[in-house]
Length: 57
Image (cartoon, rainbow, N blue to C red; front, top):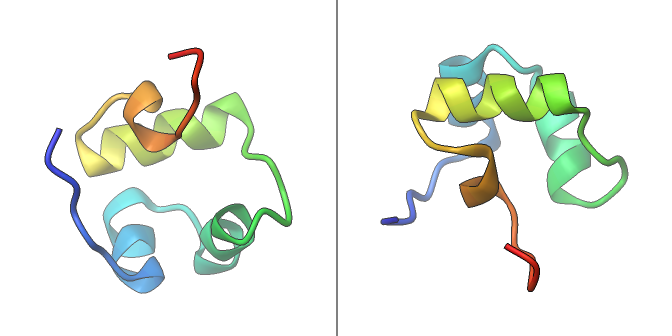
């Protein structure tokens, strides 16, 4: 999948997830809930698995 470079503000607008929540996820201060991952994936028109890096994907 082509990677899109969005600001936290742009991602928040597209997904409805608060900027502070996205910022905390990006900086590894919190782990997102499944509901948040679903909301992010839907708003960004991608899949949940495309939102994270893992050797187990």
